[in-house]
View (cartoon, rainbow, N blue to C red):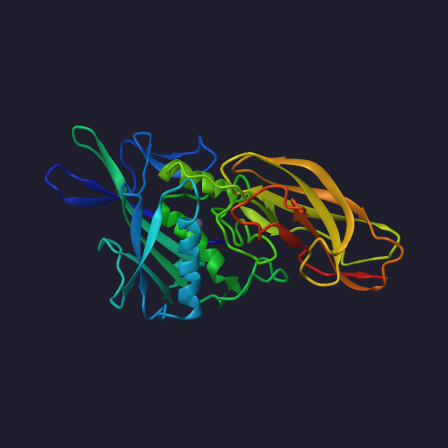
Length: 355
Ligand SMILES: [Zn+2]
């Protein structure tokens, strides 16, 4: 499912101050030299120059206190919480109509078909020379397409590509556009073009900006704060902005070997060294009290990195037949301090029946 088409409008000011909308202007180029993608003005990233902006939630679409309201605010909070980036979204409300060009960032659901996209972020920015380059974001409106079915609940591994589409995951992606980021399809990222983008993290299926996207936020809105956070995932990159659940067997005989895939990311600002434990659990929460199947010692991840690997483990012959979860835990014995330890536990996206 194609995620969206980000539509960018450039405001070009003549010296007299009249506004002409144009798609291209001197000094404006897409930039792919860094690990993430964004627009530039004479080589400078086009961003919110004050490091913050207000997002006005349409009160018809987002009834205050509704689950949709809490999910979109949660997505905003997750971007605000990226350490190393000082950027902040602030919550506003509007009951008025929506338009691109009114200087207000509106967030709303629409029956417009949006060219078939799940959601669209329309951004406006300026880039012009007047005794020096002037540039910056001016507006970002986010529209979600009501012609698709949306879920405000946790991501469902049984329909990785939707429908329904996970609202908070899509909101997180669109809010990345609203900060100034373009699609990044070369590796797993929140800004991947195709749903479910980078996917959620950990047992709690937390929609947090992926490792690469966090580096983009730090480059744009650097504030010098730091965080340590490795995160587990059951989603893997499958090529050019697409992703899917990791593979693992749905059944096995006890006393045999099985192979599973697993993904981890470094969401933090410094390189992390850690061990990875593999377990068999009789429930969906994998913890160190479950049956230990093996470990990878001395894993290593630099900031911004995400990788998917395979691990073969032996299912002991004494395991009682039944339904279990395979899973893994990053830093299972808590040797490393982290800002977020809850995203270290990850069950496979399906059960395994053992015979
Ligand atoms: Zn997009």
